[in-house]
Amino acid sequence: AQTVTQSQPEMSVQEAETVTLSCTYDTSESDYYLFWYKQPPSRQMILVIRQEAYKQQNATENRFSVNFQKAAKSFSLKISDSQLGDAAMYFCAYQLGIAGGSEKLVFGKGTKLTVNP
Amino acid sequence: GAVVSQHPSRVICKSGTSVKIECRSLDFQATTMFWYRQFPKQSLMLMATSNEGSKATYEQGVEKDKFLINHASLTLSTLTVTSAHPEDSSFYICSAHGYEQYFGPGTRLTVT
Image (cartoon, rainbow over all chains, first blue to last red; front, side, top):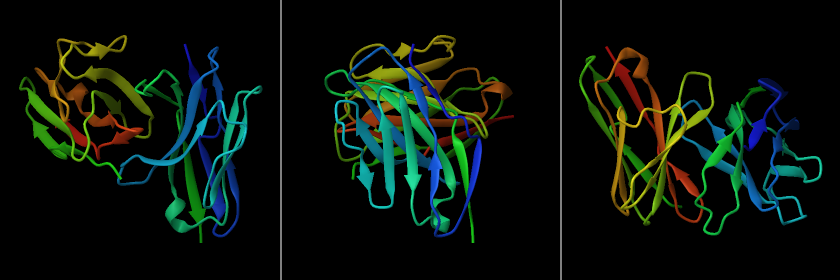
């Protein structure tokens, strides 16, 4: 069974600085997707970034970027120029890449990010 | 972007009663929807996968007779918690598969 591990229950960062959240996963599959979701206090799940395993290039979305190391099964999230609104729970998630992409998501336990002014 | 709604957002019910939670995809059709449960300060735990027109697939350890799931149309899935007890109090989140998985805002269930 696929598993996702987030080893940092909590992280903090100063406003305007950079922080990296760690995620490792275990799978024997070659075709899959990886995601980072943000859950603010409202508890609405928000997709931050998505990475297809077959793509070697790391995904980037504005201030958010990932370091995808397929051989090491590592998928870290870097947040640059941190803002107060970035404070939230961040979940790393894995999805098997069956055609149509309607497979279930497997979540890590989450990292609570605090942004200090 | 695609929108998923849940109703109600909060519900309080008495022990022994049943409560129904609706999950709707507002601007797209979803053949697959997912139901999650989230305890305070914990991650999302998948309860079941709901497929339109067929029986739901439950995760191991989830009581299918207690958590009834119906996916009668391409835009609506419902979760009914039957004979609710205080330990069923939790935050329930649905997601619907379109281009990706889109999440509803969640339903907070409190059983007194």
